[in-house]
Image (cartoon, rainbow, N blue to C red; front, side):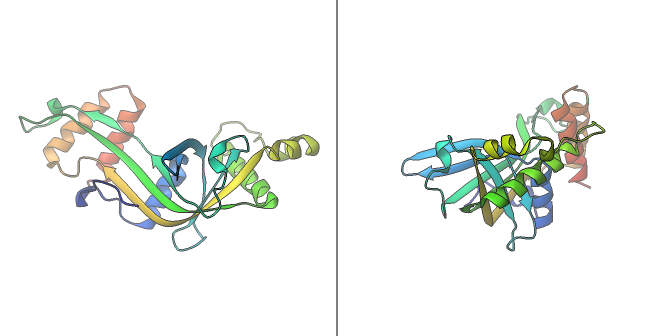
Length: 210
């Protein structure tokens, strides 16, 4: 897999940085190419950093979803996207510039295996624990709260997948190609907006241009 356009100054370096990004923005797209058709679905992913040199991703899909049919050992792509924002040329100190867009993404490719029933149950438990930890509820929901028969019936309607990562690429376009004065103007312009995405991009510009 290759990202079609990835200038040197926009490369996200370091496996840990890319893993951290996936953990932060773990709701991604799974793309599978079959013959002349590309199938896409959005899924919550769980990253295992210890499996294989590049780690592995686990997810689950409904058995009714045709995307997983004949998927074993198929090479697939997963895409994770982070904050993004429109950048107005009015924010630059330098004149005669044009608009652009700042964004961040990690692209993963690997081969898929089907999880065993036991591994699927473990995935669901770990994924729930991770996401429940982000909630403000004092009592966290867990899979143990469902009656065994009901939970077993529900798990039989889904399929667990694991992608062993053999290629991982990150793109972080956060005004690294602009002068410091222009970056200051971009950050100020973004922070004047009430959009959460804009404030997140402003922070990423500061963090990645220090």
